[in-house]
Length: 376
Image (cartoon, rainbow, N blue to C red; front, side, top):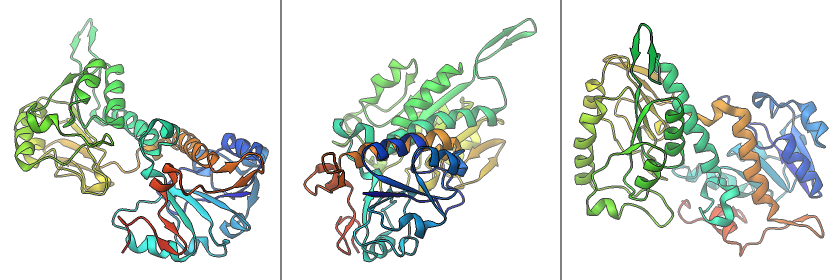
C-alpha cells in the first residue's frame, strides 16, 4: 500500500494533507508514504520533517504518484495533475462538488475514485473525520481575531485613571461550528456578545457560552433544522421578519461576523446595504460566507471594502490563514477515514463499498460520477 501526498497548485491554498505525525501513523499501519517536494512548505513543514517521519520525497507529482494506491490533497486535483497514476487511484480531498459537474466528470474519466471529505456524514462514528467542523472551528476563531484587528479599538471594558473604555459589542450571525467558536472567542476577548440563528437548538448553545440569543421565534423557526443538523433555507416572509429584528440591533454593533452557509446554494443575504450604512464608522463586518457570494450585500469575495466608514472583510479560506494548525487537523481527519479502509492483518488498502461513510463521500468510480447529485 502506497500513499501519495500531493502539493497544492492553488497559490491561495497554504494547507497540506499530511503532517509528520500522520505520516508516522500511516507507516506504522504498513503504508509507504511519498510526499511531493515542497508540499508542506506553506504550513511550515519541511521535506526533511516528512523524511524524518518515514516518508519518501518525490521531486514532482508524477514521482509521488508512481505506484500509489491513495492520493491525499486539500483541494480537488485535476485529471491532468493525476496523469500517470495507476487506475482506481483513491483520491481524498475537499472536492467542492456543487456546480462543478464538468470537473468531476473529467476526474472520473481519469479512472480515479474520488472521495469528497466535505460530504462526511455528521454521525457519531465520523466525528473524528469531520473536515467541515475542524476547519470551521478555526475559521470562527480567526474571524474574531481579524475582526478585532480591523476594529482597532479595545474589545474588553477597561477601567483606567483616565476613564472607562466600554466593551465592544459583537454580533454573530449563524451559530454552527464557526459561529460557536466565534462567540467563545469574542467572549474571551471581553466583548458583549449576541448571536442569532434560524435553528431553535442553537438558543441554548448560545446562552451556555454567555451570549444573548436574538431571533424571531415563530412556528417556522421551530422547524428550521434538517435531520443532518444544517439550517434550512427560510421563507422570504421569515427572512423579512428576521431582517427587521436585526436591523436595529446591527446599528448598535461594533463587530458583526456572519457565518451562514447552506451546502450547494448561494449564501443567504443577512445584512443589507442599508444595515451596513446604519452602523457607526469604524465598525467591522467579517463575512465567512464570502466564498458563496456573502451574507452581506456589499461583500466582495477576497477583498476588504469600506462603505460609510464600515469595513467589510470578504475573507476567503480563513482556516488557511492558520495553515499549520489547519493542516494538522485536516490531516488527522484524513487519517481517521483512511484507517477504516486498511486491513490490519494484510496491511492492504481495501474500500468497503457497503460502508455508510464510503457511500456518503464517494463521487466517482469506474470512469463515472456515481453520486447522482453531481452527475451531468
